[in-house]
Length: 64
Image: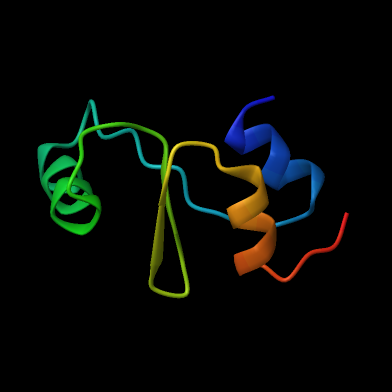
C-alpha cells in the first residue's frame, strides 16, 4: 500500500507534492527532513520519512 492510498482510505486530506518536478519544494523537503528519501509527510510539525504507518497513525491519533 502506498502512503497516498492509505491516507485516502482513512479519509485524510493531504497535499501531494512531486519534488522531482519542483526544485524549491525538494529543497524545502531536504531542509525539513535532512534527507532526500520519499515519501516525507509532515503532521503538526512532525516529520515522518518513509511510509511509517504506525508513526503516522500515532501522530493522527487513529486507532486500528
